[in-house]
Length: 241
Image (cartoon, rainbow, N blue to C red; front, side):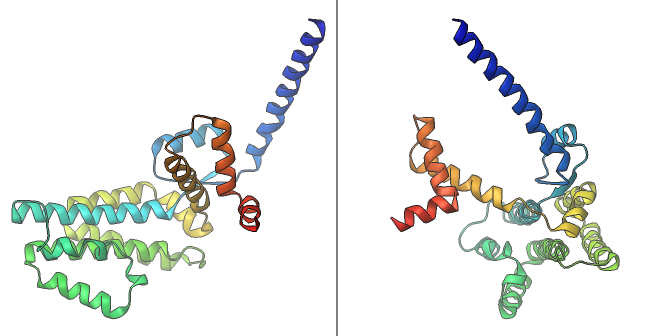
């Protein structure tokens, strides 16, 4: 009993030291990349008050594509009286609309714009404006890691905000409000280029491993499988075998 008590006391002391030493890493954290969740923002402000928040550009691009999709769906329902389906050109162009124009060939972009111009004006015009606003935001985000000067950022932001304001679409107004509210964090991304793409990719691999296994009943096995899938050294070792 005495030996057991000594061991338990030693473990408590060791754990206390580890906890006190483990919190020191917080003091050196300078930036934290997050999505636009207010819960994450408040948690980081509470635990890491000295760190600068950086909004990851993936979530902004996703939000812009979601806004464009909302505009397309709304105008389709309003003017066709139903959801889009095969035979409705705006529905058939949905995947191309959410692609970045910078990753498309010039003739493909011209063809897309021609397709939109051939739609009824009440459908094609709002979608075209929303697509241009989305591309304006992507152009702004593309300046990250290029050391953009203040005038370049100002001009791109003004172009995006002006287009959203002139469009008169509630979806674009909401997107512009979100960008304005999160602008300090977005500007931090433009200056630093910091992203949490690596952790997001690792998290996706972990979820895929659990899904392929139809769930793990043994947490130890899940940790081993996860480490094998997400650690380069482990992957190389398995490939060599």
